[in-house]
Image (cartoon, one colour):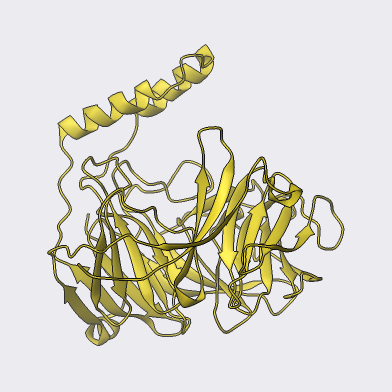
Length: 387
């Protein structure tokens, strides 16, 4: 369902609503490939086990988080090896379970470790700086995607956004919204404040840890950060991108004239059938029984959420991916907007993937995997040309 904006009447009056055209304007997916790394036949440092996240800094250097080796590998703008740091262990600069990566523009790095509940901070040269304990505030620790503030020692995250991990410590907290939070890293313990309150659909809480559960076809909490420290987020089934500032809340909403479609019984039955077929043939009977029960009791949204992914670039651009032809298809067209309310165009479904990281000068990075399961990171340069 379309989300109400959780703001006061005074704040509502201050919001600017920009209505973007509904008609698609197709963009050419001709990206220039800069380099690629990762190969069984490449150098030793290119043998990645499991690439979890990547990031780019202001010099165009690529940072690769390999959770299998617990290493951060840094690749130069020419595709050559620069350095590696981290590794498994409990000493300074070592990780027990690295599950989130944030790369600042000046090359500093933050790694979220869900085993010792800390953020590990590294200098631009890869030297370990210090640890900052998570701000637990009594609830179970949940690690979501970390987005670095472009100009401060702070991160942004959002309850219910790109999930990373959960630790069963503390007390279960029941959420009444999906807030976008700013995490300050200046002290020994992180502190948090709320930038904006995202909408939490009724009945949207999971049965464990109070983590918001996405109903089938329902709204997701999607967020990104702009160069000035503002954030963009989507929290409803509608095509609405909300832009908020710390201490100010939501001040602009971007809308396209696309409407969510209602969920029908045919869609529900088709989705349950699809998920039943996805259960592995060799699954143990207990697993199959549990999976079938989960599918039978799966909650469904009343509407099919339009937006499935959101990321922000270094120049204030917003990339949002819509659903495809089927309600369960997350690989639909990708729209490119700007924070000042311009629609630049869209990439057709299947023509490109959503970038895994953005960098300066139009750089984007993609994590790819071949048929043998070998992971590669491809860095390309975007040139937006409207046909």
